[in-house]
Image (cartoon, rainbow, N blue to C red; front, side):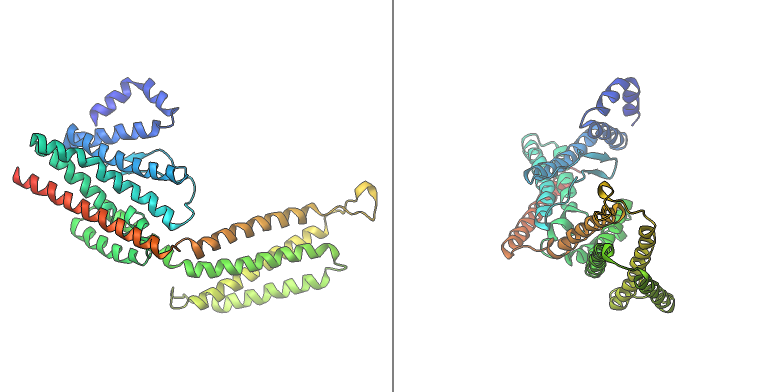
Length: 367
């Protein structure tokens, strides 16, 4: 690490140049990671581990480009690996699985030269490279989101994530690794969010219904002769919803077991919020001066307040529609695709397991 700090201090102009290049973050974080690994394990190990991680991430980048998905350059984090971020969501889980598979597949290819180098030179260091490469990529195939394995098996069923979580939890307990514990926590959140999508889908469907009613009501207002009855109706709705919330709001509900009751409670809350919003807008609209085209009282100009509100509501409806569509179709895939994904996943996991055992056996022989 000291060498890395010295170089960065002496070559500040290089840093300034890298900051303005597309891959500046990748190069800087790669150098920092290399320095960290080299300080603890030696420069050969540092170069090997950074190389293996870099090729793995480039596999994701290449897969993303093949699918037309823009991603960020790789960003290294010492002792935790590296990551890239997608600048747009894949259209479905099958596409996401393709992107995820690219990493471990490239990772497999990355250490194959080390197999040939060991067979040629007999140098045990190359066996270590094989073992590390296989282990890193095999670990990434654990079926837990956000690991690559979890994103691959999501095409088959996200229920597999729970099995992966159990396996990862056992490994975290045995290894006491902070990184594994961190991944377990992220994986638990991912599984929980997926398990709650059905409930959130119900909430979104009701929100869309309320938004559609809200837009329809706004379009009706310019034709009203009087707003008195509408005001009284909105006030009554607000009071009814508040009483219901006071009566039922204090009791905690158990997720999954009491989702219907929880959904009904959230619907009452939405009823109140939309009624309050509509009442406030109605009062503001009443005080808005009416404007006429060319001063002609028979040609009133549509209210900017209502027009803007309708536009905003339509944008929100479009967003809710998009999210609902994702909930309904994102994880759907033909049976043929599922079989291909399963076969590719098991084959890659099997090959990586063989190479990990190969590297481990050679290192044992050279002890």
